[in-house]
Length: 80
Length: 138
Picture 1 (cartoon, chains in turn purple, blue):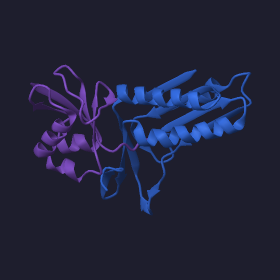
Picture 2 (tube, chains in turn yellow, red; picture 1 turned 45 degrees about the vertical axis):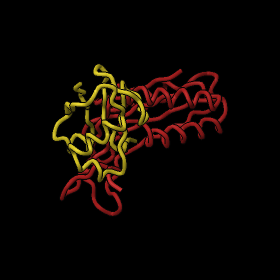
Picture 3 (spheres, chains in turn yellow, cyan; picture 1 turned 30 degrees about the horizontal axis):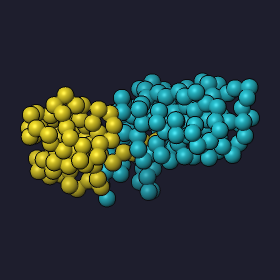
């Protein structure tokens, strides 16, 4: 299945656009998606950390993704 | 009561303070974040803030709810700005009211400290010779 990953901050600069479509297996976990993104965009590995949000909530590594989820990459936040 | 806002428009500080005031409250605590003209001695020209707005609103609401559970507060307001902000402009206003000052001080500090750790908003510092996403790299 194909998932669309929204990007913000430095992740948007690394992707070169505000979202990327990533082809993943059915029942892919957040951890697997993170590895796939790091393989496609090695500069992500240089970040202090990054999280994945699913449907506007921070996701755990073992969360399983659905094709209709809204997925976003959350690089280290720095508001305030 | 909770008031959360993520907006491109300038923040209205007097309106924020008025909103948290109530006859039951004996104290209001306000944190106003402002754009500083330098970081570690290096001149900053301006800041740019970007937000994942729906998630930022949810995370800010969660923080306000946590503060209301932890302290006996009357009202909690968190407003954050996005877009390009010049030196001296105001990216964030947090205001809380409570019967007594201790709860207001403690909650206000908790809210700004935790907002900086969890709310999906990003700050870019623009220098004369380049720009940096704050906290992105170790």
